Structures are given as structure tokens and as C-alpha cells.
Length: 95
Image (cartoon, rainbow, N blue to C red):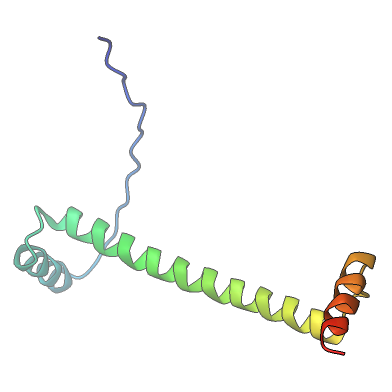
């Protein structure tokens, strides 16, 4: 049975920060049960990124929904033949 070799390339992310801040982050990583500072930072940043992206997508979708709704209300299209026929049949039920 052949094993597939995954072609994953890693990228490096470096940052400079005050020593006190690094020690603070390392303490949080230890207390949080993370293997190391890198795991803590990657997981925390990933969670925050998902939150930001999700919120932004909801706002964009909400704006698009609003635009579609108001477009339909303010500029309604004329009903096609089938819809007009269905409306007439519905009205006939109650007259």
C-alpha cells in the first residue's frame, strides 16, 4: 500500500514584541495547556480570524438581503402569466 506524501509548505511569521508581553503570552499559553507559545498564538489568531471573517460575511449578506428586499418592494416585477392565473384561481375560491 503506497502512502501519499502531502505537499504542504510552511510559511514563517515573525514578530517583535516587548519582553514583558512575550512573558505574559507564554504564561497564558502554559496556563491554557498549550504545548508552546507558537501553538497558543496560532490557535488564538485563527479563532479571532474566523470570528472576524464570519462577522464580516454576515454583514455583507445582511446588506445584500436588505438591498434585494427593498428592490423587490420598491420596484416589484409584473407577475408572469402562471402567477396571475394562480392569483385569479385563489380569488375565485373566496368569492
